[in-house]
Amino acid sequence: MSRLLDEMAEDSAIESKKSLSTDNAGLKTIAELAEKIQSQEQQIANTEEDLKKQKEELRNLQNEELPMLMQEIGIKKFELEDGSSVNVKEIYAGSISQANKEKAFNWLRQNKFDDIIKNTVTTAFGKGEDTAAQNFMDIAEQAGYTPVQKTEVHPQTLKAFIKERVEGGDEFPMELFGAYIGYKAEIKKSKK
Image 1: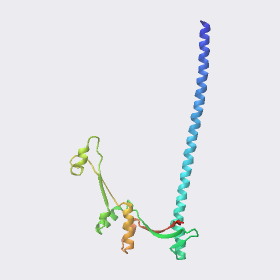
Image 2: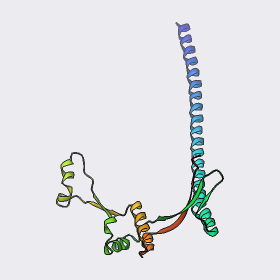
Image 3: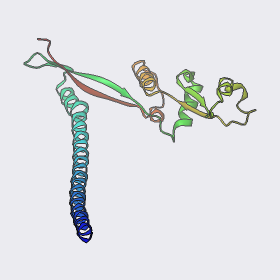
Image 4: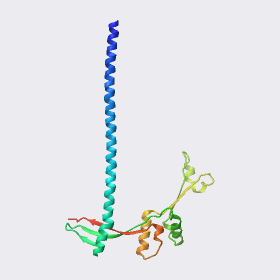
């Protein structure tokens, strides 16, 4: 009987050592994978930062350097040896800052351009309140809901508005609309 107990104790010790070595190997593998994840995350962060820098350099070449040089020389279009063409076109952009929003919207309304202002009213409803949602505009205040109102001019609409005003020779307060007028060089590849 004692021999049986000794064998059981020995088997238990062997299993314990196997389990311990398996646990150590497992922990080592976990640590290696965690380090690999950290390394991969850092590589991605570095790649994204590099991409950001490359995009900024491309924007500078397209919107500043090449258009400025072509303007200095006095050409708007240029053909490369491979048949591709370099074209400089005028671009328009704008962004209404939060600080200028009220003044800009007032100017649009006073000058009868308020149709470009998008006015959205929303509120949150809970589960099972579909009927209340359908009748929202009529019952919002009576039902105790507080609607959230958002007014904005869509960026593409603002861009078109600025372009229309500038090309039409119409004066407007450009600073209120964060208006930007610049140039961009585009290269169209040859169809050869």
